[in-house]
Amino acid sequence: MANKFNKVVLSINAHPDDADLTAGGTAIQFARLGHRVLFVSLTNGDAGHYNNGGGALAKIRRAEAEEAGKRLGVTYKVLDNHDGELMPDLQVRLQIIRLIREWNASVVIGPRPYDYHPDHRNAAILLQDAAYMVMVPNVAPDTPPLKKNPVFLYVYDRFRKPYPFQPDITVDISGVLKQKYYAVIAHKSQFFEWLPWIDGVEDKVPENEEERLEWVAATYQTPIDSLERQSLIKWYGENKAEQITYAEAFEICEYGKQPSNDEIRKLFPMLPERK
Ligand SMILES: [Zn+2]
Image (cartoon, rainbow, N blue to C red; front, side, top):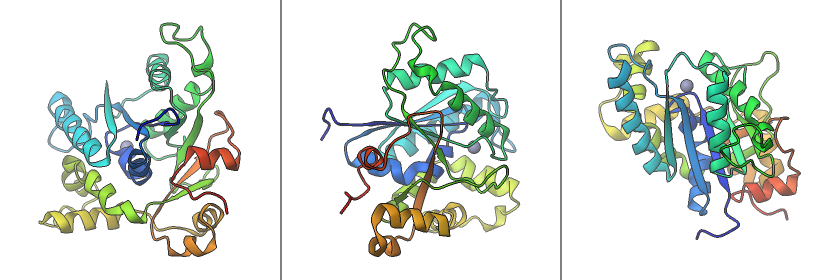
């Protein structure tokens, strides 16, 4: 299936489970179509627990990410920066520039800089700071620069200030929802321990695996809103868009390549061809 037209998609986030939630269903479809997908966690997740931490937790989270990657069909890379302490500094920026170049990414996906978690905001700034610089030969000169700026995309978040998320590209994930959450629940330490603890719903965690998957999907998969529905109509046509029950949406960052609609259809081969 692999050929020279294959694309490389990088989803770069703060924590080892962020990419799964925001772009897991889209990643499954890229991978099924023979494209390469790399999920990157900029931190090792060593703060995400209430009675575990440091190197021991980082080890658990690395193994969970690896399992999630297998379930999605993507490569999962966990960098060794501390969780809860991610800063938009030059060292991490250079790590990102090198990764984007080494993988020759066409698309780079990550958070907007308006999210509640400082690591998410800083991950967003790091991505913005890497866009354009990936083409500058004198920056990180040990790694050959890209000839073209990739398309940088933001993932959905619910925050409305300074401006709400705009769904420029919305992907139907109805057919892969179960596989997405099968991958998400590989992060056991998060979805059945840490997050229920910090959200005060530890007593709600179901016992069996099937119920657990459904519980996590119901908790974390946001319903399609009216702007996303309009975007689905644009990309899939009215008839198909009506039948779509779950989706992942992306906003185009102004600092990367600005793709035309035709280029977006080529970059996202799971979108139907224009009629
Ligand atoms: Zn996170």
